Image 1: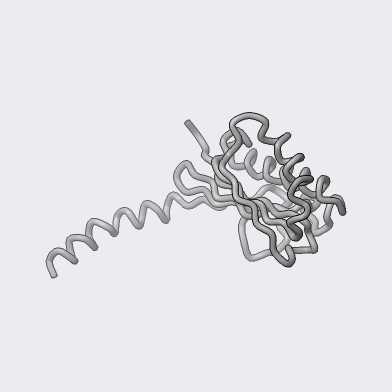
Image 2 (image 1 turned 120 degrees about the horizontal axis):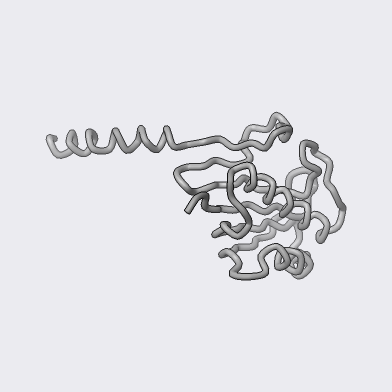
Length: 146
């Protein structure tokens, strides 16, 4: 019993620090009244929500094609990273969601231009549909600071 109490006492301050370190990041003018944040920073790690190829601040897709949507999604990722004090060079992991796996090669061609050197780890999956009828969604983990 005493061991459990000591563990709880040791854990409580760490839990408080984690809660204090949590910072919500939303680019100015990007609110669409959705139940998630653009990013959350905990310590020096950024957890970005998935970005689709919408015109920032709207629910309008910037393009109908996979190449254009991939480009806009990555521009949206760059914008969130910039607000949070990071860059594409600091991205360590991406997950790409495609509505159709046949778009893989075209998405990959655009994606490669954004990560030309030392690209982050990545997973790509395809499903039956994405928000707003998007063809691609990209979420990332990145670091901030030194």
